[in-house]
Length: 419
Length: 173
Ligand SMILES: Cc1cc2nc3c(=O)[nH]c(=O)nc-3n(C[C@H](O)[C@H](O)[C@H](O)COP(=O)(O)OP(=O)(O)OC[C@H]3O[C@@H](n4cnc5c(N)ncnc54)[C@H](O)[C@@H]3O)c2cc1C
Ligand code: SF4
Ligand code: SF4
Image (tube, rainbow over all chains, first blue to last red; front, side):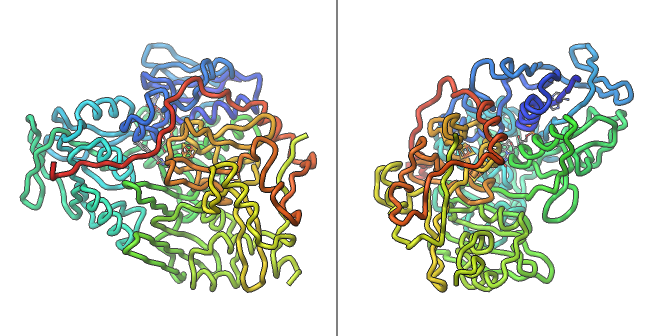
């Protein structure tokens, strides 16, 4: 049995290791096109502030990890998939045949349609190579313009500010992390960042970038910013282009069912490239987050090894640290129709907690300044536990999420029959 | 034989000895806020519930970690955070559905129960037997053992941990 995995990111590596456990005698090949040991994009912000070196971004640390697990890692690019013949074509020329194929090619950052976006000194922040390019220019005092204050933009914001750069963030929408936070919380994150010396321009667009040293970034409000470095973090897109003509159905990402199988026999897809089931909405979407990549990797491997495991949908969730202000969001944080919500706001201390209910179940949440037991929000949402009288208690004091979980899942008090 | 923490809320009186012992032994301070075990209070019922990581089989925290900073201790089965590898990204804190990994803003790393290497202080400190360290029955353990055998080797070399400093550009310069 030959398993081929395209893509050496977290999804590919987790899947390969899980396959090795479940299908000890199989041959496993990971084909990845980046000129690096398999690494984690998520670690890039910490590389940018020299907290780790490049080896600290590697997904697995021990020497010979892949060889020890009898996993072959090849550096090459898959240019075509022939699903009828069950083979893939490599850029280096060869064709390799598979019994089961996993597409784990992730997403890539896409440049916004701005004239001058290809000028020297304009970079994405998606790969290790991008990080190295950014570190060259993002010296202390350098003028940096960060385009996009979405999740990825906001994640690297801290690293850029911590490098001592003179940072300006330009976001098209009316607040920071608009797909993760409502206006109240997004507004507080902006105020926090501004207090720390970062300029944040919301409802503002970059219209043109003029090449030069420095670059000139022209905004739709008539102003222009001089910049030594421009970082474009305005959006990503699944790597599906090489599947054209393969017969494997794609939409935005690769279409998969609840076993993460694609439309082609023995071909699977997982992680940032897969349009998988969303726990909250029941829709198939590309979530492009690490926990989903890891969960997909394990489930898909189980199915490839013949142990059917159904994907029940991943919860979309994020945790973010913007210069010391920790924020998180889960599931239907914006609420559902006919649902109730509880909100706790302490703007002076930058604390916020918003819970969203459907009936007496928790379906979403967002928070600022919450670092204790935050994962239980995932537990409450994904177990669909009925909160019963605890819903009312949470409406009065949303911080009691952990008690609500314990009271409804452990034998304490009433449900233990002791009170 | 692997052992696990057994938590019996009905025996807990809310004295917080476990939190004190845990924070002192693991963080060097008597400070319940730094404890990896936490006693939750149910005022109305006058009840208490000690709670911490169950070293669950699924180990969501471990699998979500982008840099392999959570590993399984082959002797105890505990999922342990390697402080010198953890970058403080906090993904594990939202991935654990039991809410038992917490971010420590002072160190810039996460904290979770590691069973104190096989001799948990909370169990020793508990005066009422609400926390005991007992043999796990065999069901469900086999998979965990299989896991332990596969646990990744310790990393070769790493940059020493250092507290997170946030110093940004100041325009007055
Ligand atoms: C700076 C940054 C910070 C992030 N922070 C967070 C965070 O805090 N929390 C979070 O949840 N997520 C975060 N993410 C997102 C997270 O990194 C991704 O969800 C995760 O990497 C997805 O893993 P993957 O294996 O599916 O894809 P990838 O990691 O993208 O790996 C796919 C690999 O496949 C390769 N490939 C593509 N096409 C081919 C081909 N045809 N042939 C061969 N190889 C190919 C790609 O080059 C890549 O190496 C962050 C991302 C970035 C960039
Ligand atoms: S911290 Fe949570 S996910 Fe990790 S082992 Fe403990 S209970 Fe499981
Ligand atoms: S906070 Fe540390 S242990 Fe947790 S996922 Fe991130 S790097 Fe791993």
